[in-house]
Length: 183
Ligand code: ADP
Image 1: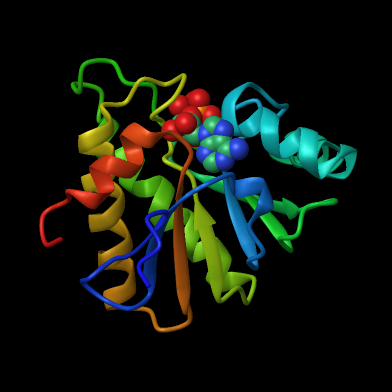
Image 2: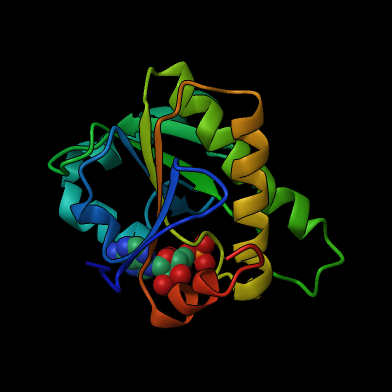
């Protein structure tokens, strides 16, 4: 039976797209669309800190003390506190500024660097939200294409990751993924 809230991505059997709440997903690492302060914010960031409890923020503070936050396109890893995941990978998506500020490359870097950090921490399963498509206003269709391209590019040279779940929270993103080229 086909479940309308889960789409196996046809290009390979590693990527799945689902509609849901990333704080509920039981995988090795969930990715947070954080901001460069790493000290919490709205959207998925707020949801992850609320559901995960204070341990995540505590570790973020230690990272800030050590390296002064996280640059756009880069990623850091912490415990997942009370969440069912083992780790939270915090990556900072680009704010959309019309597309002339390297936004596309920076968004792809979020996916590459998060996947690299997951592999470095022996994770084989990872879940992503639709980075930058909320408060940071990245056009959703373009962001969906960039995310799938970046993930597939990473998978070409890496066999550690066994399952990548893209978690769409809003229906617009979910519908866009259903209509991506190749579907
Ligand atoms: P950004 O600042 O990178 O745009 P947001 O958190 O505002 O980050 O939005 C990124 C995406 O996360 C949006 O598509 C939003 O719908 C989605 N989102 C918000 N809450 C959740 C959640 N609990 N699980 C998964 N995705 C979420």
